[in-house]
Image (cartoon, rainbow, N blue to C red; front, top):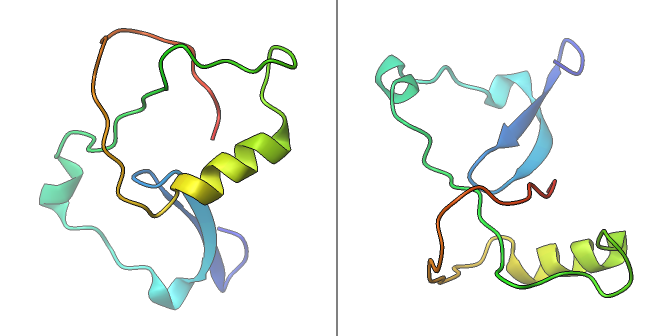
Length: 87
């Protein structure tokens, strides 16, 4: 809870967070809490930054602007544990 009137809500399906009025927050149905996670973390194959071990913030922001809230199609080429990159 941010304060008595606002809370921070994180959307696991889109990966973003937002501060919203408490009046906009509703209780989740019990049966929905028993569902498995519907969002799946994934990464792009064979993609790495050229300028060092991590992506510059400007590049991360640009990628988010190009991909957030858009329908994307992907092809799974390998399943397994990969590096976790914070969103």
